[in-house]
Image 1 (spheres, rainbow, N blue to C red):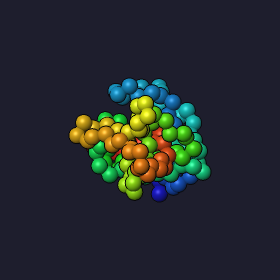
Image 2: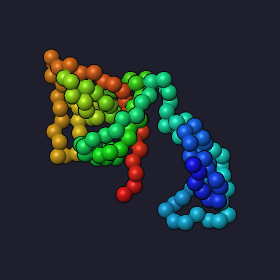
Image 3: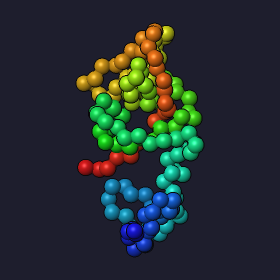
Length: 143
């Protein structure tokens, strides 16, 4: 299968490089003088820093819309990155999956939503918390 991008045939099979246009798009229409390629790139090279420790997950729900993560989005999760306060993580708390921002306040740990409709979840002293990885990128279609 192939598509045409700026007059170039592009293979859309996995592992193929996509053309990277050097021109920056300011929201208007690019100048015809800037209609040349900077090179090519593979999306996995752009989105994945640690291939052996990275996986994709599909998000369900809208608790993270304030962080730009919407229902149905794909998130890139890297297990090689150390979870730290302020990072968005995929975590399993007492058997339930969450995509939340991890926040440590003193001795207390919270999994925080990015939507005011949802309350923060405090990780209790006896809770079982397993952080699967840190979310590094989000992929979603424009509406």
